[in-house]
Image (tube, rainbow, N blue to C red; front, side, top):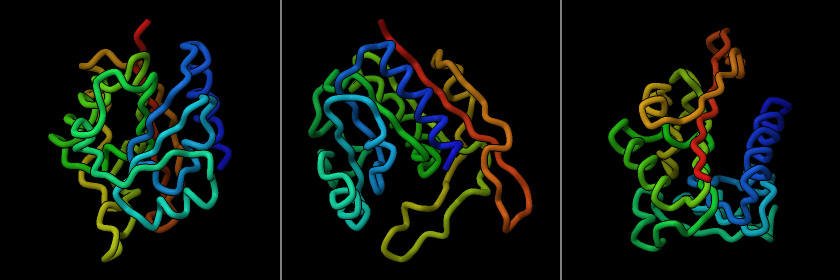
Length: 178
């Protein structure tokens, strides 16, 4: 938990510097990350209804949408949010879909796009029959973001994976517009 708080602190510093007022989280899950953002308007999107119910109960001030995040442009206009974030989400898609997700986030955001996740596939959760979206299908690849002119912060040994007895690095990738 301390590592996540530290990353949230960095994200909130970016948000503060940009004077962002609205945020959209892709794959919001149970809402903890979105709830921790220092913006006035917080919208989370996820296709897994049980997680959205948990988020709604824990954080009633969040606006939550059950929708496929790869199809958000069907319901959102370009430049609809100051900041679009994706924590632990892009690795849940094959690389082509992850690239589509990043491109879409850039079209929806007016001030910044921020992604965070593991650099190795070993953090893949065992998908349950009712939530296959937990499976990791690709790596969060620094080159994907570097080629798109993102700033990248690497967090060595961020996660400890007991079942394989090793540590996994995490990365925070962000791109800001002024």
